[in-house]
Length: 242
Length: 226
Image 1 (cartoon, chains in turn orange, red):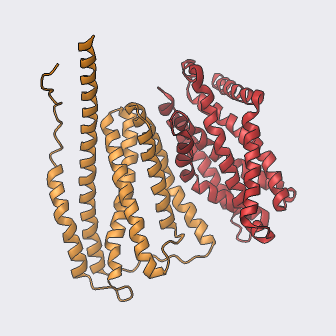
Image 2 (cartoon, each protein chain N blue to C red; image 1 turned 90 degrees about the vertical axis):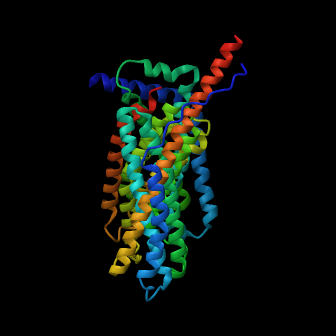
């Protein structure tokens, strides 16, 4: 049994992955440079305001990501094709990363602006709850060993979690309005230079997001192949001993 | 349709009979609820005004923290001796299993509340009898949503090694709208509804209950099959 073990045939990554990776590598610094060059520092907040260029897009892509998790979960339950499950899991992971980033950046911005790290603003609070819901989604995945069961269970959790997004948002919003707390609307009056910087950053974030999700999905596919291959090897070895 | 109702009834009867014969779970959950109420009292201090202002929140957190213990048990008793496999082998729609377990859990948690709420009224001096009708409505609406999601997530969590951690981790973030709505409505009923918002909070609870009952019912088939 000492013959050189042949590894499994590696599935090729999708063709778009590498170009998108390069695009992300270029777009991301370009967006930051534009943000600092073309838009003047805010009159009240100075350069601090430029955190918005990364804070807002990262919240947006995370939100898009949760929607992708929802769609991929529905499609998995419909078709029982594990590729949808891998997409859902990869997107959930990357979205959790961006949600965490959104909260961290928001806090860094909020401390000098409002004087506090945290406030019970509806958007902030619902973002934190979203983070918890999808962290639970990932925890459930890591505790469930059987692949097919993991896919079904996490699809159900992904669907119910997304249904809760608007309910959480509006309940927290009504809750805060009752308490008469002024919330600062950061997306309100912004000039065109800000809008352009925000737009460029959003595009850069979207590309980066797509690349990370593609990479993670590819990795999940490889992991699965490796597991299947190891299982096969173990089986053929035990056959040889018998 | 009639047959479905009979199946649901059989599950409810089976679960409640198992509980009635031991009472172990009911006793411990009620005891825990009473203890949580006492602990909140100690944590907040003897000042009557603070307790008054937050009694709705205390009441609902006690419901959530004690009630969450009952859901996993509802499936754990099926895991021994392949009972769940037998249950799944019976002909008919599997959604009957979900609805049956949901109703049994609902009955169980409401029964715990029947003991717990008067105890809370006693400890915190709440005007319970003056508002018993509206308060019962809030408790029932809030508990339906809580038990619906609890029964749903426990179907997964109870079959994991980390079940004690996984159930609250999955369940509690989902319950935020329900907690907000139920606490606001309870506060409005107990201390006067200055903003006239209690009715809106009750509507939120109804919407939450309906959406997640339908969603959980549809998704249940996918999580129970194995």
